[in-house]
Length: 441
Image (cartoon, rainbow, N blue to C red; front, side):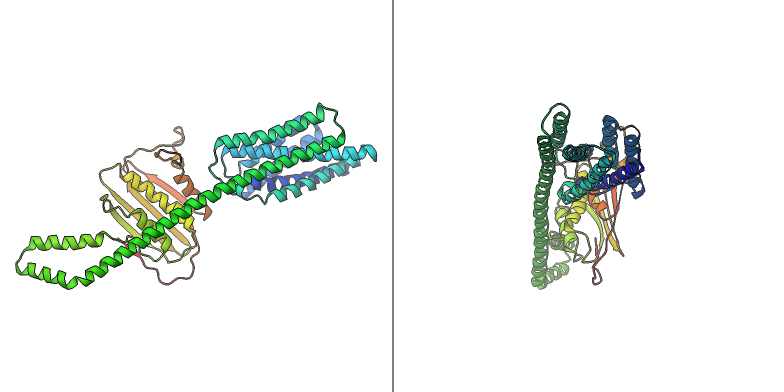
């Protein structure tokens, strides 16, 4: 075996491995393993695939190694198992089709020019490597497909059959028919095009799903802001009303004092305080995102007789997107309020603090002691799922974790028989701001 042949194959294999890394970025956004482990998985694929090809060159074995390697590589990324399988199948079909196309095309040229030789194979390897890398680099522009949207398993399974069917078509065409070379090449190019089109449609579907999700979040954001505006306006109106009637109220209390009617004084004062509490603003830091969500979620706390203990100390501006604030704080408060409904002693503790570049959030509440895990054989705290019912249940904690990971943060869930607690740390950079206004209740 010529040295040039081996070197050419190894160099082309390096390009293919780089192309695989690019191709994986079409499907996956976040890597969950360390850089060393991820690089090691790609290097192992390079080593075993090259060794088996150069030593034995058995197509079935080479193909099996590639499929297993792609699936192992996909475990470096955050995604569902079915999405990893889909990525593995698409990756294998994509590179197998490219290699087949280059070989068939080159054989067609060889028929009319030089005939098969070791130098011809060397050139095939180099062309395969460059062509694979260029196409995978272009496909990397599909960004929406990387998002970990909650698309149904039925769709993923249907999508898997497209590349499998295409690969089957190519195999039958090459090994079981005697089609003219130009027809064979045309069909292989069409198969490659359909495979790219399938990825494009998948990307378009993910983009449409993301747009729909953003519309829902924007609608929720508007509702939060409207509630905040109404709460602030009611509070202002109450203050104006009390100020306008202050002389009357004081005169009435003075009359009752002169008559030493303490019970009526107490009732009268309670009535005035009730009017103030009826429009209570729970958070007034000047940070519209946090204030609006807190006030919106807790607006009925008084009517539900929930005892609140709050400490919100944050600047008016923090580099946390409103979507993430709504996802994190909205879901935490929703879960806490739902849990409170199952117990007699109703209370909720909320702590939000910002110091330097760290945002700390903690929500603590009582619950009935029942915990449901995603896997009853694995009672890890990270496997806790919602007890809600409905099409959208079970995504609250998952979505919180995604937002926390976005800011390289940490999420800690603890509980005993009666108390459930969620603590978050987010790494954020605050803008320039004045001295923050703390809200303590």
